[in-house]
Length: 349
Image 1 (cartoon, rainbow, N blue to C red):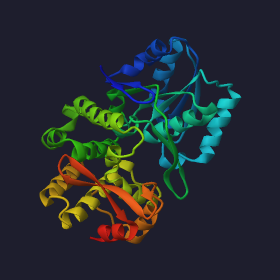
Image 2: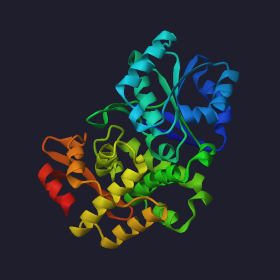
Image 3: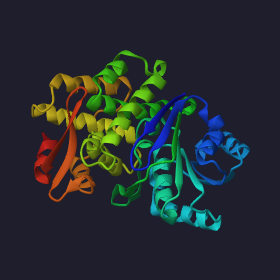
Image 4: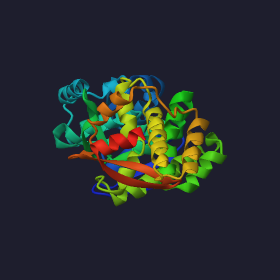
């Protein structure tokens, strides 16, 4: 088992290993030094497979466990469900000393984290991400949010978790498509921060080096978050592929996995930046080939105007300009800022 200490306004620990969840109750108890209510906010399908293991471990450690489940899809990250969980917390007399525990993918972590940040002005939050994408990206850094009908993650807050547990045990039951959607975020990390990790992904079968790759991705995210917890500069690079990706998710009514949409976004942006000489063309081809190695989409037939319309709701627009990340070459990302109309021209190539 590996441990990472994330420094910031509220420091926390991240554990990576296998079958850690069987000891999750004691792990939490050792850090709290007391028992309390634990509200398990979970993906209903994940709970059917792993819920009893987590619940048993918590109860054996002396915690009172309450269950709030919801569908593990992006559409669930809304204010209707948020009101439901607030009511659940109130009716069960949950207090500030108690704990919310997220069990599920990135959507559940975002949702549960936002709830923990806002209920009673903040209660402790443990994140147990069950997808590869959530383990390497969304569970680290404290971003929490819910969606509006206008766009994704438009209402959110930075809320550091109390503890994060990334257990590779969960990944064995992921579908091929869901697993590869997580690989997309690892490729993103490699493309903008680590030529070494990119080479590993090209040469190795990821299942043979999975724990190492997860740990390396978390090391990268840790370094970025510690330098820029509130996304003022370098952390913006982690949005590589997301400007187009989020717009594509909205255009397809979230029927595409987040990692797949980011893959399209990375490829789309890099293709255009290579045309303008910002990106080395060979680097674009290498990125495209690596995405295809993991059966990830690299293009879309969704109407450009619809994608651009959804980009207009992006929270990275400041005044008349938008910030976005490009990959100059493998392992090197750069933040660009363009007026909206010039950005539209950039996307059109």
